[in-house]
Length: 172
Image (tube, rainbow, N blue to C red; front, side):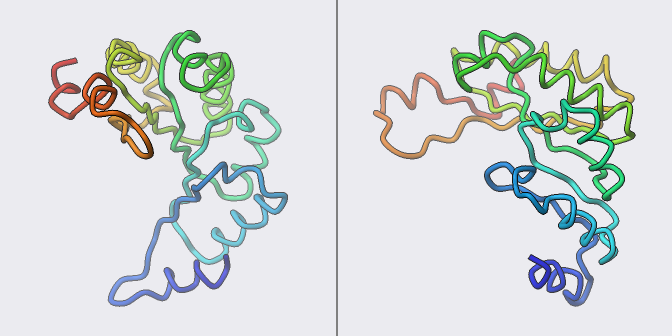
């Protein structure tokens, strides 16, 4: 990991200033805090974690993350109701997501909400997510709407039914 980060910091003509840890759930490795601290020592001016937010619902974890150098979360946030989470993530997660946002508020970590949007699943949540972001503008710095991407074995009919485009987003 350190070799990869050093190659970004030594990039020419301009070294990378920001780093985002993602892929799977980056908070799970036992050396998570060490990796973040290393990025901070290397001089990355912004350290972002792409996360489901479960660990950040624990205030101690959020504080330790901020102390290590985390500046912001790229927080998976698909809805403002549990029925959507149960359908697409398999369990109720809204309380955990809201807890993570509150803990980020308490620790000074900024949040970018990242909803994956699919027609007939959560496209009716676009306005609710926007309103939640506005209500939490002190901690939520943005929303990165991600239209669903189909990989694997989906029939043409399934793809057409659930496909959500940027034009659909503008309409919502």
